[in-house]
Length: 140
Image 1 (cartoon, rainbow, N blue to C red):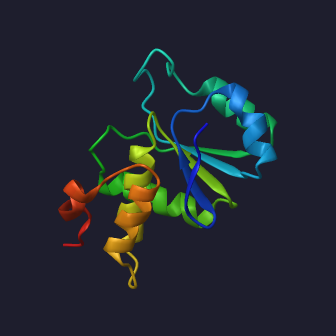
Image 2 (image 1 turned 30 degrees about the vertical axis):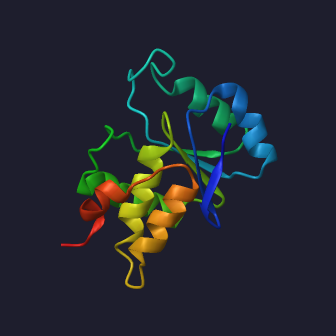
């Protein structure tokens, strides 16, 4: 796993597997948000084994599946609600981590004291250059 912290209490990762759950528990993660679509790849037919492994380890599991590049208002709101209610630290993941970081930026820009430049720097430091999508994050 390649876990990158975006802010205290929230990190992202590329795809995880049931065999990773015990390590995530050891690392202290208390919640996981899955952004993968069921059936999007041979290694992600559905999330039932991941969900079961997380629940067995006492880690809360939330699914907010999104299609890459398609961040609906509903998905952004569901992400914000999950971040507000889940115990930290939280791990958000998808195939590459890009959907997780994008939803995090979309959620953060809704805060009054948001600095989009800092958010984009944090995303870049985590391995995801979102500068080309900068306009999509600006509140309208």
